[in-house]
Length: 263
Ligand code: PEP
Ligand code: MN
Image 1: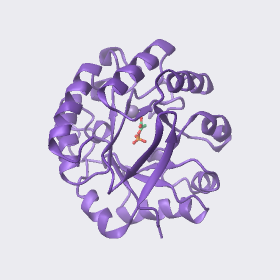
Image 2: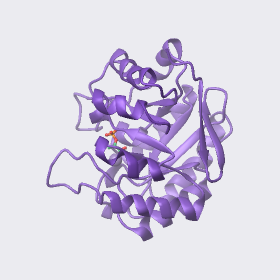
Image 3: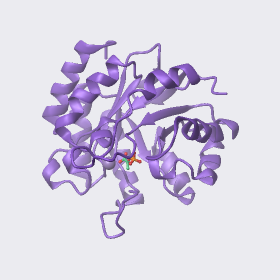
Image 4: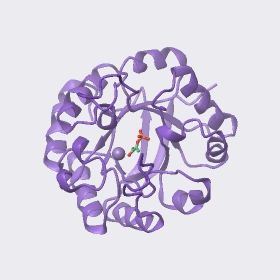
């Protein structure tokens, strides 16, 4: 299954297409929505650099229960404000089906995170509603597991699924948080028409490795990129070490324009 070779996403700035026959789409923003000022500032900066979507977590799946869990529903309001201020589409993660309604009200794309890739009841729920789904690859998921998870969403009636590679478990965590599986790009092309996104931020866990992996992703044929950007990565409440500053993101977007399909 998986008939859609592109996903058409209405945003305040117009319909954005993600797919093989369209320009590369970039999603950028902080790991977590921390406060109004930082999300609006980040939104303005990533938009100026050429991003089409703002990302930011309201509900955060953290390894430790004592780590910052996200501001929850109040952060959804801040994302709505950033959308209003910039016209960027919004991508944010749904962790619990009970938050679907308020989240779908402000999100243009609903993210299902790596840790919920095989939460089948959640997949059925987001398959039974209209918003496009960004399905991140589970950290220990095979390509087959991942495609079957996508199939749950498609089978429930939602054809608009984007597959996001975000790194798989590595045995060498001394140097990288995960192993970014760029071979997933050509492999998926032989197996599915669903559009592809690469997330080199979670894929490497280190800001200094993000630009080269982003460029490699475009060279390998990705349809879209997800990049974590924070106005002050050292102070970030989550994923600071892998977050680019707005200046670094701006430079990356200039460099990416040289590599592949026009941005
Ligand atoms: C995220 O995008 O911030 C995130 C938690 O991603 P993943 O589910 O890939 O770990
Ligand atoms: Mn993150």
